[in-house]
Length: 374
Image (cartoon, rainbow, N blue to C red):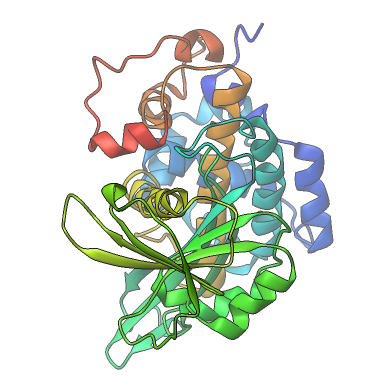
């Protein structure tokens, strides 16, 4: 079916290019551009993500070595480091943010029936923030502390398939609790978050919208019990109190007592604790993308370049997730990325290349990564 096409071109066939062109038009990405289009920029940066390039020079040298194949990759212009650097610096990052959101919209229905560890029909999201440290002298716009720069990735992760449905990039000074103001609560959905998001006024907005939250109580939380529900202490539960549901749980493995707060009074108390345990998947997601995508070392120093690179990295991640489902591949995302990184210039049909899992041959960095992305 794809005989004669390079693996990279076969992978890019799954991109909705009509949507991409609309994003470019929306933000005038083609204004005064005579060569090296926004699509060329996207493909070069996606290639860098999928093949683990380290710098703009690395991208330039690699692609120039294969200059006779650039047209077949879908890249219509010569690749020069300065041209790519300028495109990253001046072309509106919102083009790639909107395009990543369109890919997320394609990916989520594909994973709608995936299990995430708790038998629940409703949509469950995990909300968390990760910090990426930067050099203040190189990234002065990303102020964090007196002698340190950083950006924060605020992410809402759909636990069915571990697809990021909302990402907000801010400087290091923005506190994570402020992100609750930017979320549009989905009625009936569960939002799992840690203590950093505990703000009763903001959480009440989720309650009014018909959404459910599960979070941890802080050590200095002052509450008064009105009435309690019976619990099975053999499971580690200590109490289940209301009207804001407060659940105390003693972890049998660590003997640590944890306090959970939720506005859901229907689910069993132990199920609430299991839901919060699933929040760890967003931590694994952050760890995974930092290890396997280029979002810690940036190819440009401007805010626009950093944002563009992150959104193209998200697009590459979601694209591979889409291909995995469409081709019904048994391999994990980790395995798929490892195979793709070495075969971009091959002409093997993509489904044939990725059809057989090689779990026994590839040793993952962490067992948890393959559990998360199988």
